[in-house]
Image (cartoon, rainbow, N blue to C red; front, side, top):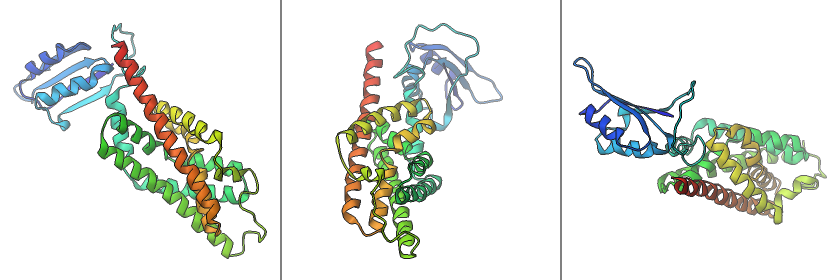
Length: 294
């Protein structure tokens, strides 16, 4: 269940009455006193959260005039209402997460740079453990999922912001990998007979049938993890399609092998497209199923 508190409102009893008319509102009451502003308190089912907020907007309540929070239920309470997009999923909730994660912040950039350092060494040493470590550090799942939510929510400004954040992060990973690989090469630290991609890491620059399949599966996992706030646990699975290819591109360019770098860039582009397609399709399917159940 959700708790709705309205702090800035005129005619609180009238607003409480309008909320009570909504199918899915379990309780709505107005608190009016002579010494404090009028308030409204309501308990509602998750699937009508967006409708309830539209009601507040129609009533003239500003965005800073209310608080919508998920209630931690201790004792069971029977409810005949169907969940929203998915069990425990509130559209307004994931939209808020998407809005926050679409922004380009310093911590995100630093983590993407750290991922670039680790992934660069993993590519150079053909070390799968370092590659996995770089994927664990990378937070690129967040803006990618934010873009999917914005696409389904038809918010073009947020789509652009999320995609720019994703692009900047991956560019940072590639740039750090390129600079580090170049420095290790010109300083003589790398062996003279190093052949980039000689081991299993070389598959990062080749497109085959598994490229799209893995990215599509990762896209489904990404959006489900984003909805359940399990992005930290699933981020490694998602980054397997982005961070290794980004780092490989940077390393190849840093070592003066643009052909291999461009191949990795093609892999990265295909992976991102498949991730967006699968994530958006998963979210759209959930919305359609929820509408069918309503």
